[in-house]
Length: 359
Image (cartoon, rainbow, N blue to C red):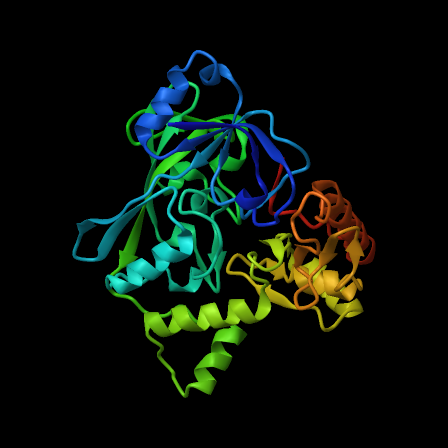
């Protein structure tokens, strides 16, 4: 267990916002968590779990003890007649893990290639892209209760997955018991995920149906792409649309795509026939938040060093260089975000919901 004081967090958040952790503890194993919880000082302090920092906006220095999750490891746990069950440590890079699964011959995660962040953060956000969400491939996870030190296991139902949502984003309410009898409550700020397991189908087939993927299929005269082709295409598409956080600080898609009723969608279409929308299986309609923002004229606009990305209005970026004197602040980012929300609400009657965690 490595403990550091007054640690700059620019390198630990993809927005490269300037902030410091009063105390940062590097968690490389389950035993590190137990050692921390037994510590007379840090064990009783409030705690903040930090993965890859790809879905976070720091609005100031972090006073709780920051737990930087660096638990590594990738392995095949079990092979059944229908699936490969693979496991990764919470500190593993998500994209590197996806690439590894394909190299091992375990397809199923390719549509979620190049999503930033760590494996441990993936179930918190229920990440997803191009028709596949983490919950579609999820088997189970192991976590530590930061109040009691007890290790527990959750299946998909107990994680309460929703659109970019899970039990780890909520606090307070009592939920079902976990597989080992541990009582599940809203686990926000209470649990540290150790390992995540995925069920990858042997009867694999590509998940298609998105215009960008259709274009790639047409370009390559391919009607049934392989998992590796899907992986490569998704990487190409994302790199063309989204800024590299190493070059331009950002937290990926800043707002969730809102869901509305058919009636609401029809009303918007009557006013804006070009609105980008997708019909969902339950009869509701998902609107493209980027299109809504773009329609309100925000593409390329800035507040201080925080701006709206020129190529994709759904992305807010740090136009500074991440140094103390030339960087977007969390305050600037959130001021810009609130102005966008107000603008979209006034025009469309829809309140966009921010995806990143604001600290």
